[in-house]
Length: 144
Ligand SMILES: [Zn+2]
Ligand SMILES: [Zn+2]
Image 1 (cartoon, rainbow, N blue to C red):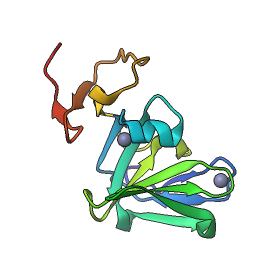
Image 2 (image 1 turned 90 degrees about the vertical axis):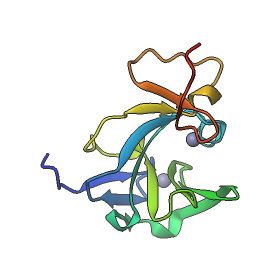
Image 3 (image 1 turned 180 degrees about the vertical axis):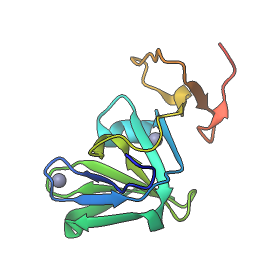
Image 4 (image 1 turned 60 degrees about the horizontal axis):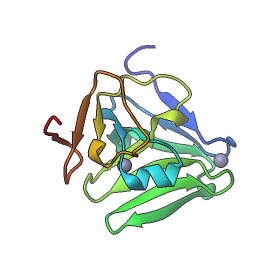
């Protein structure tokens, strides 16, 4: 893959297809309770990209948005329920995409665990990535 190759992804049923033009901005595992519940998963691996580098190329009518907090909304497929996208006033002009919906690897690997202090009690992470948390979800945590 060349660095500027367009990345593609889609939902479970295939109705919604989208493309991302690299470079992406970041990639991280989010352990916040909202992501956990929205995706029905232990944590969600997101990457961020400028909205101008993102395009829905099929199934846009089936893309529904749920306002999960005052500042944020989550995009999902109305047909199969796949939880695809996240946008927040905290990151204007940026869209967050769940990495698991991509057809292949992107231009970077996950770099950290965020909101790690909100993680499910039954989750233990064994990799070497930084574990961040605090009010922003992105601050160094005191060891122990
Ligand atoms: Zn779908
Ligand atoms: Zn989250």
